[in-house]
Image 1: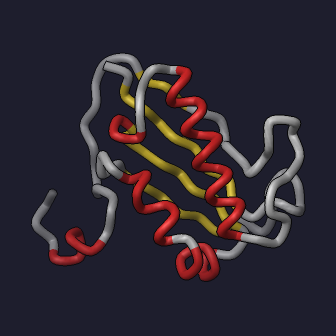
Image 2 (image 1 turned 45 degrees about the vertical axis):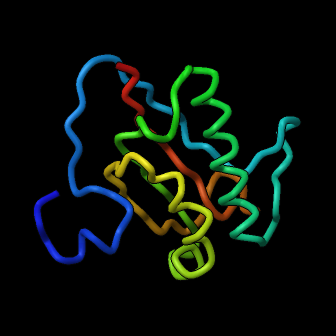
Length: 123
């Protein structure tokens, strides 16, 4: 941490040093195991599903959210995302990764409200 006051109020770091093997995920969306969109119109349900899908990837790679070094999160409604999902997403920031949040006009499927990419240190 750099010692800036606001750093103690956010679950992410301004920068993370990593080395070794890295896992780069695709943009993970709120799809169920059959590919259907979960939680149409429901930001909380979609964020929860995205993190559940990320958890599956991390488990398969024999790692955890503690080793995520960077999240990039795209949402179609940044205000709703910030207001409605703090309690869902903050536990997944356990390793204090760097993070970027971007509002976009739409995602690949217009029913989707959020997409999350992760970079994970495997060493």
